[in-house]
Amino acid sequence: MKKKISKYFLIATAFVMANLPAFAAENQGACDLIKSLKPVIQTLRTLAFIGAAFVLMDWAWGWIKSGSVEKDKLKDQGVGMLVGFFVLFGVGFILQFVGSTAGADYFGCVRDAFTK
Image: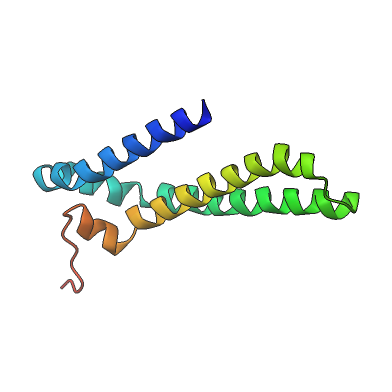
């Protein structure tokens, strides 16, 4: 079941990323939306990176506090924690890209380096 969900998520993400540049080139509204939501994107990006750090910190602190790592706990808890970390870290990277100059170029938005 988890593999099926991750497969659908990957397909949906690839579809959206492949079609956004064409959408942005035809409609300047997407560029204006990204520009107006930049503070929100930056906040969500920061929270995603902090969330990923807390997931790993919780995982490590549990092992430090107990003093031992059992193979069953690693299998049950570790995979979920690792997936949670990579999902949050991936969301952080995607949001970082969307709010960056490279993301603006990818979506077809024109940025002026020097304005009068």
